[in-house]
Image 1 (cartoon, rainbow, N blue to C red):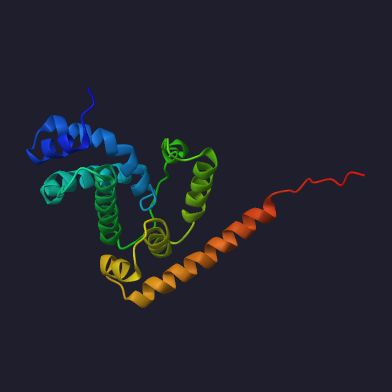
Image 2 (cartoon, rainbow, N blue to C red):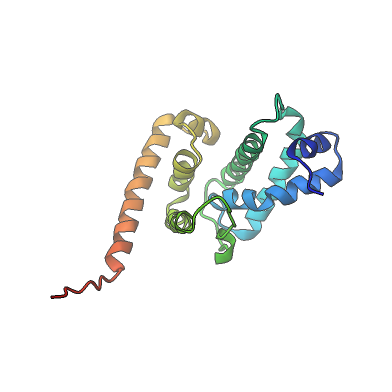
Length: 195
């Protein structure tokens, strides 16, 4: 029997391992998808997700359920923020050095039943190009463009001035435009004129 979200949350609040496991299994892939945008070493990404879930379970009592409507949107958003912050903590600890290693191609292909094939393909293409950005630009781009953080939030999370956040975003966009232009220039065009 599938448990409803409120039952799972309440089970986690009472430290019931059964419900912790259900929550972990339900949101593990979702969390990996988020962490992969920040951490490109597969083993480190898995470690960040696990550390993130430890934080989720330790902080679940702070997740207040005023009414059940919207809980299935609010819980993933709350988990997402924890995963992003846990990723940033690791990057800060590593002093934002580029990661060594690679993530298997299949890891990006997290099933999303709500998105069309075109949107999934565009997302995967965007992530592959974003991976090429220097870490400080990539983090700000991910946080602002993909995850919706404001510059003051990014500055606070990363311990940088707001101006640096804005500058890194601008530079990230310029680099992405250059990468996309290069990619576009490499695609052969074979349209033939018919008479």
